[in-house]
Amino acid sequence: PPDITVAGIRKWDAAGFWARLAEFMNNAREHMRRWPWLGGMLRMFYVPPADPRLSRLVASKFEQARAIQAAWVKHGQQIGVIRSDLAEDLLVSLLMAVDEAADRWLLGNWDRLTPEERYTVTESVFRVIRTLLEPPRAAVSPVQTKRPRGMSKRAVRKPKALAPRGPGR
Image 1 (tube, one colour):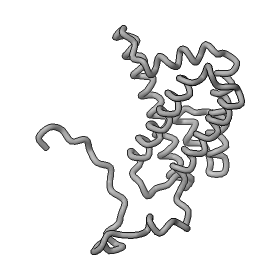
Image 2 (tube, one colour):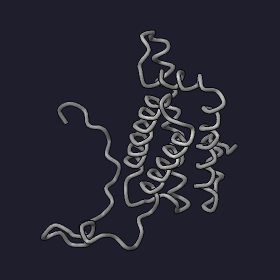
Image 3 (spheres, rainbow, N blue to C red):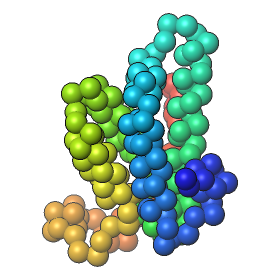
């Protein structure tokens, strides 16, 4: 299996980046197939446990997942396989949102899906994530290139990451 630690991800090259992510997804899917009880355990991540100790544990696991996904995005941008026209923290937030929505839906529907349907859904979600994160293609639709009146081409630039704003700022 691929090394999905932050240090391991930093060793990935452009040629194998997406294949390693796909391999990670395939391994996770195989674990779910082999040990169905994992689904019940994973559902706990989306239904906050009443016990504060378990809630803290779940929150720390989400933070670990966010750190790993942030490492994917950062390293992927550095090696040119992930788009750099959007802020890194925005891409990580989009990735987390798609991943969480897919997980919630999949876990909520797991028991009624056939193994083939589970495979198809997870493959399709992986393609959605890859399409979201890959650098944009040269050919884009006219709607995407139309600028508001008075905005020059130079005025369109990537915004810097914004610091969270507190009350009264």
